[in-house]
Image (tube, rainbow, N blue to C red):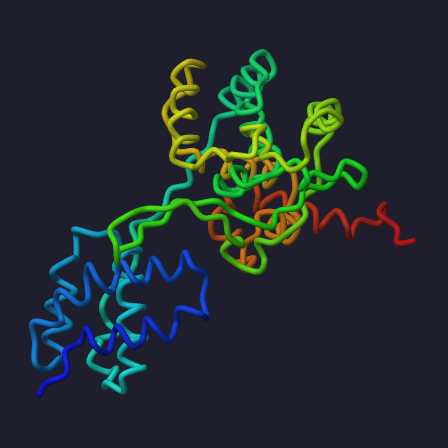
Length: 305
């Protein structure tokens, strides 16, 4: 009797359940139940053509990132089942379309800050926090007043909030979990502007409350994104994704400093190469400044102490 692919994938999922984050498990389960099992269970044996046809089935329909994630899970199942991994042709292209970083212009940046200043509410405070720290939407939604340390001028990022799809029962649920990587658990310095806004509030709020809802019930990312888009329309700023605020913070930092290692730590990137590839794009002016800075350091007038 032929063993179905789904029997191998089920065993693999069970082995992962207690070893990975719940949100990651839900993502893996969704891939297995909605993509892999439904296709590979149709075949008594799996060869390179079967895998290739699966790839071409979704090429152009899913993003490169999604296809890459599916094949990552497929490779792990193959390895766990003892299948020949060479039949997963490594020449398949998982390159995503070149990701263009969306950034608010300086004028748009100022307009949003002015809006927060003249329409100060807890939910609008989240925009200022994100523009001042570069934290992700799940991190700002999960932020509690107890995470704000004004004595040391730090915001502690140690959790994220997200809605996950549970494929096994076809429902969604909100979870609060650790951030996506170990580097994402971090402390971020508080700017002077942000401190001025937080200082009078921290004295009167319940420290166990979530910041942007100022209650014991958080605002989930989906709801916050909707509010963000309504705000952009009200303020007269073009429609961008909420993640644009994170990109805007990072881009302004790059424009004013070349301390990319510190920026990478602030953003919680797992590698400085992610920061460099996303935000640092040398042009002729920046190259000239780099050379001029080096030459000036060698100038006779620039004496070493």
